[in-house]
Image 1 (cartoon, rainbow, N blue to C red):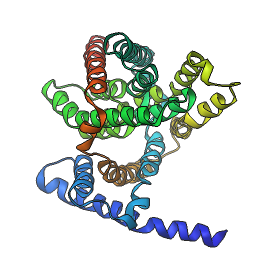
Image 2: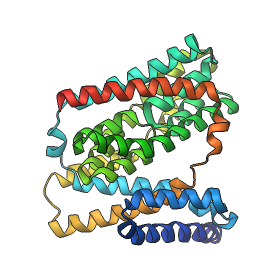
Image 3: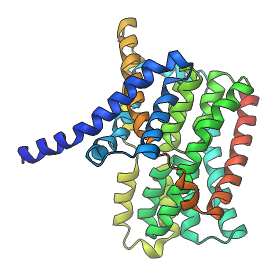
Length: 333
């Protein structure tokens, strides 16, 4: 058993080398060409995947990039205190829940009543757009027995908007001169997937990155409720409910608990300034490595694979959620 585990670890090495090399290149070139290192890491990953292709021997290691993202997020909790969270107050929680509910209901209504999409495809799009991107699509798909074709369409649509918002949000944030908290929270409540949210947050500023991450984690935690609601709605497909419980458990982002644990520890003041600087450097590198891998998932073919109607549904709901949430944030912060 040990030998088999060792072989699996060895098989990951080429891909890990690719991720590390991409992170190092991004870190070295970013100050020379005046581009944010995280965005450059994503660009390098996208260029590798689309211009050359990820070598087969490196694919397994490259696909571990989400683990580095999770590790970076958890570690970032050491630099966030309960006092920092209280600076904005419970109004942010209201915005998070309100934006998620508005987005989910808008996608559902548009998909079924306006564009005539199949019920389950509409639900997958709604979950992905309102909670945590492709992770939500996968979680809800298991609860409602969605067809693989619908899962593929929904996932491709979400990934397309992840790629678009990676470019558009920093431009809008700079044009409107949004403050760190406003931009970070706005990205956290309106963008789809965790990786792009963290990327654009830290591209704006350290403060925006922290708020974007905290807001997105709070939004991600709603996945359990959403899975249960959809499982109840599609009760005829859920059997005795035991599979639903398992889906909720598997779909819940447990790394949120690790993040909160470090927030609690940081609130005691146990970390020194030198230790905080070291932690910041560590999670910065973890994010760089993760975003090289994230870039490899950006494919122009997503536009073709998604189809026009799912894109139209999500686009309309996204624009409404993005504009309304930003207006609310500017009014209360």
